[in-house]
Structure formats: C-alpha cells, structure tokens
Image 1 (cartoon, rainbow, N blue to C red):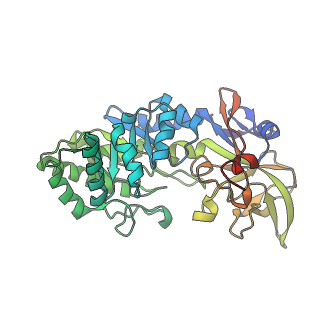
Image 2: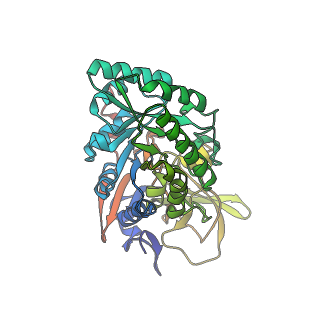
Image 3: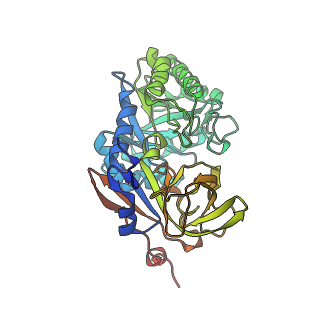
Length: 414
C-alpha cells in the first residue's frame, strides 16, 4: 500500500511517521506521497491502453516546483492557466511543445509572451482572443498553434462554483459561434488550428458529462474536416473527481474508456488535462490542535493551527475533507467542530466530525489536500504559507520552506 495508512500507533506516509515530520518542520505542513502521485498518474495513462493519448497535468491544481518536475519525469505534459504557470513549467523542465495554455482571461501581455514560444497550443476562449493571437503572431512572424475551447452547454453535475461547461459559465466559445470560427480558420495563415478543446467542470463523479463532451468533440472533428482543417488531436480537458468522503467515483480505466468510446472513430489522439485526480489524494495537511473548548452539550470546538489560509476549499466550496488524529487517543468518541485560527466565521475545516478524544498539542491529518490546497493558500491575517514535504522511497525532504514575515515583506516599502 502506498500513501497514507495507519499503523498500530500512528498514521504514516509510505512508512514515514507523520509525527516525525511535524516534529522536524512544525505545523501546518503539507506532506506528499511521491509513490501515490506516481501511481495515480500511471493509472490514468494506462487506462487508455494502446489508444494514442497525452496527459497534460493541470498546474492550477498544484504547481509546487518539485511536484511539477516529478510529473515531467513521468512523461506528463503541462496545462498552464497563466504565463506564470508557463514559466514555472519551463523551470520544471517542460519544453514549450509540452505546454498547452488555457485560461479565460489571458491578457495582451501574457499572450505577447506566449505566442512566440511555440507552445503545443493556446486554447482560445473567444473570437476576440483569437483575433489578438493572430495579430501577435503576424507581428512576431510566427504561426500560432491554437485550439478553440468550445462551451458545449453540458452540466458537469458538480458544485456550481466549479462548473465550466454551461452556457451561463464564462468559459469557452458557444457551440454555434465555434462552428463559424472553424469555417474561417483555413484562410488565416498566421493561425494553425491543431485541436478542439472542452472542459465542462471539475470534481465530476459521473461519466455522463464526460461522454457527452467527448461526443461533441468528435462532432467538431468532423466539422473541422469538412472545413478543410486536419486536426492533430482532441483535447477533452480534465475534471475527473476523487473520493473525498469515501463515496464511489469512476475509476481511471472507466474514465479513459468513456473518452475513447466516443472519440475512436475520429482516429485522433486524445489530450487530457487532469489535476485533482492525480495530486489530490497524494497529500495530507498536518495541523496541531491549539485549543479545545465547549460548543454544545454533546460537542466541542477543536481549534487547529491550519485554516482557510492553508486550505480554502471548505470555506469556498463547502468542500469536505476527512480528518483524523495522527496518534488517536483511547476513550469515547466525541463530536467536534474542527475550526481554523483565521478571524472569519467561515473558517471551519470540518463540521460535526465524530473523532477520538482530542486535546491541545494533538496532531490531525486533513486528507486529500494535494489539489487546490497549497495552490490557493494566502497570507490573510499575515499568516505565512506553510512548509511542504515530499516523502519518497522511505525518506522525506522539504520541497517548499515555510514562509517568514521577512519573505512576506520583501516586496513592500515602508
């Protein structure tokens, strides 16, 4: 077994006691399992069998440099949502033709940097963005490789804050407009249409929207062929969910099969952009209980030293994360409200959790925090960004030092 598992005494990561990491590096601290990250990447790519495909890891989920490098070593490409993620990817060893550039609001300055790089594709979100890319390509004397991101008006059936494929969402080009753009691209020599792209949402736990989007992609491939455009691949985005609460989610095999079933007839390679499904379960956030105080007759508050500044998902999406003591105490189970230290009433990491007895000084592990954890952390209340640790082959190392107040103030003038 790889990842996080209990022994008779405490929770460990690939055999390394989490208490030892906390003792050395303090809390809060993110702990990643390299073995589990590798396994989850390989499971996804293996699901496609011999069908041509490429995984482009979505850096928005977690762009810590060491993790990006690890994925590049596994053979992944990169999906970047800003020019700064592109620069991070290049520092991690990805070449421009390994990188797709996604994002609904790419500024002129970002596009001016991106167009001359020769990226695998710029996934354009509107007719206006396509015009801006074309003008920059002509000015630079290059042909820009582009993919049209189509908004297919498909409900991902996930939280509305992470839905991206409905007509009312800000993402992509509406279906009818996308068809018109396809028809005119053959006459625009500064642009090369290499793909059609769709991403209908995140944390999908049903394959129905995956199949529907893939079928739409296949239809656009035929439309492009009729317009005299030979696409290089179809980009099916990401969005495969993980099991935060122990419920059933589609396996990597079933996810890949759903895409291949709909796209196979086009004979085009498939590109996917998973993030959460690779890195999400590969981390815990370790925190220390700093106080326990009464809440109701049957429950207590357990105040911990990690909150919405380290893990925004519970406050932002009402996201659920399993929480357990690293070294469980003996005694009757008790109901706790696991609360963070930030001066906001929304700073609740876990509501109404039934756990072994907790006391000040105890360590707790917040599970499945590899995605949208450290990537969304902030300095609210002037709290420093937490340290990050990677466990690999029985040893561990710090991959991101804990931020200091001097780090925070380095760019400020008195």
